[in-house]
Amino acid sequence: MTSQISKTLVCFVLLLMTAATRINAQEPQMEALIGQSLTKLQQNAAADASGQAFLTCIAEMKRIDAMFPDSIQPKYQMALQSLYYCVMNPHAEQTENLLTGAEQTINKMAEMPHADLSDIHTLRGFFYMVRIVQDPAQNGQRYYLDVMQHYEQALKLNPNNVVASQLQEQFFEGMKNAR
Image (cartoon, rainbow, N blue to C red; front, top):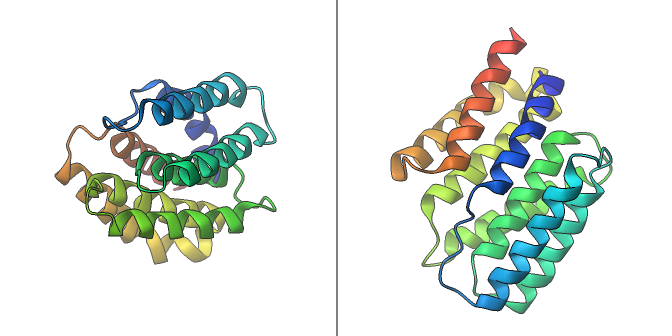
């Protein structure tokens, strides 16, 4: 299941990055910086088996977040790209630190008054999905319901949440192929 989810997620990473990011009418400079970082990631991710393009993007999102600490979008992108890296590299040296950072970022976002709860549930579902990919035998039964419930809640809150919809689809596909 690990390799199946990872392979299919690589294909969707490029689709997700081309989808319009939901950047609110925040600082135009921040929007430009995030756009540039995601464009570089999109250009380099397919040819980058080591995941260095994701790590660079995550570092850039951390820098942007430091510049705009009250903005949600850099935090969202930082957590999302961290989780993408982790699902594609579940046993890499950086994975645990990135997962810890992503979880902390998701929790920070949840405390922000203008956070999109659909995005929070999407990220939490993705977090648990990564845990399953890391160790399907131990974590599959443990986190399966968490993944399902978070994606369902995300789509209930926002039926047009493309990321939640695609991740949920990939999760179902991975579970089907694992049998």
